[in-house]
Structure formats: C-alpha cells, structure tokens
Image: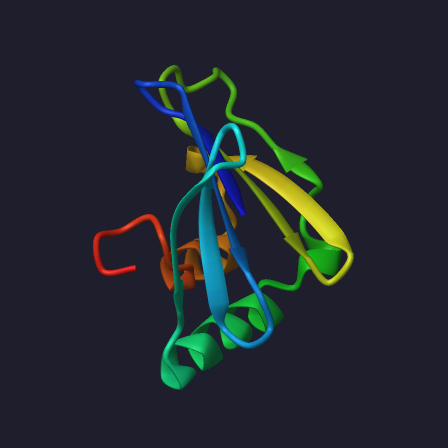
Length: 107
C-alpha cells in the first residue's frame, strides 16, 4: 500500500510479505522501518484483505471536489490495484489500512 499527499506531500509505501514481515519505504524507496507482524495481527490483515473484495472495488475513487492536502492510497493485492482518495476509501479498504503496519508508532 502506498500513501501519498498530505500537507507535507510525503509518499510512504508499506510492503507486507506472506510471512508477516514488512518494510516501510519513503518516496525514494529507502527503508525507513521494518518488522514482523504477530500471528494474530497477520490474520487480521489477511481477513481484511479477503473481505475487501478487491476484484469488485472501483479501480480509482476520487473526491469531487478534490480534498487539498488529503491523502491518496494505492493498494495492490491478489493481482488487483485500486486507488482512492482518503474520503472515498471503501469500508473494506479502511479495514485493510487499519490492519497494515508501519505508519503508526507501534509498527
């Protein structure tokens, strides 16, 4: 998942592997942090990804009018890529976002 925009215009990408190991990258693909999800948290993420139903989500969901200084998210999972402005995130994508590591202080 990649998050871009915001007041500072930063880009961050978190990559999670099947074993729960993850890496947070900056906009230049430099490692910022890494870790490994606990088994329970990994299962929460897997459930959220499954329930998000990527195959049936709009490929792009943008706000009208645009939200200046807002975030845009791009998710890649199971051969599908979807992107949405923060105000247009489908409920399933919100659950995925909440389950992802790296952006909060707890990893």
